[in-house]
Every structure is written in C-alpha cells, then in structure tokens.
Image 1 (cartoon, rainbow, N blue to C red):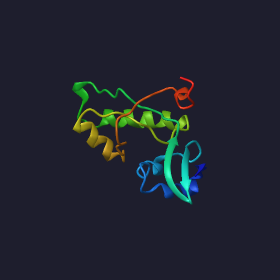
Image 2: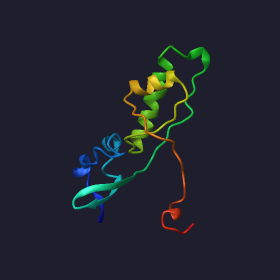
Image 3: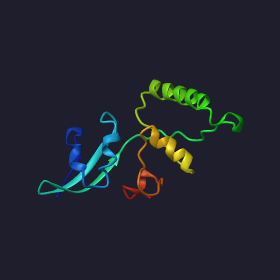
Image 4: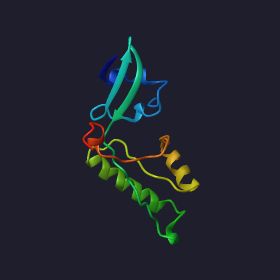
Length: 126
C-alpha cells in the first residue's frame, strides 16, 4: 500500500468513491486529496479543503417573495466572497423552499451529517 497526495489532474480517479460528487467542486489551488493505493488502485481517500460557510440568510417577511432583496443580498455576498478569493461556499438548509433556491444556484448536497473535531485526534495527541 502507498499513501500519496493525489494531484488535481488525477482527481477523476475519485469517481466511484465517496468523493465522486465532491471533487469537481474543490479548488485545486487549496484542496488536497490523500489516497491509499494498492497496486495502483485507490482503496481509500480523504479530502482536505478550506471551507467557507454562509449562514443566517434572513429577509424580513414584508420583503420576501419579491426577488429584488434576495438578488441584491446574494450579489453583494458573492462580491464579498470573490474579494476574499473564495470560489465555493457551504450552507445549511432547513426548508424545501431554501433547498429549491440552493439547487437553482447549482448547489450540491453533501452526503451525511457534518461534524467537527480537533486535528490532534488524527495524530493520536488527544
């Protein structure tokens, strides 16, 4: 078995793994994909990437459904994100209405539940 960091030019090799729907959305400048290979075949993989999370979208009830406020809010958030060099963001969803909006803008659901834990746990320091 060999462990290595998979170069972005080879990320298509992740098709058929848990990362097959994710790798296309990773920024090759900042993401790293670690694979374990056995005789040239990927038998394990894991991705590390910076994550920008947008959360707390709110529009006053008197201004919902008109589109103009949402469009203005999204355009400005997009400009802020781009000014920071951000290419993708993550967010949560609690309603079908928000899901439809996210899907309209090309959002892809990340499978599973999300957790956070210290990196030291990976190295056995915790």
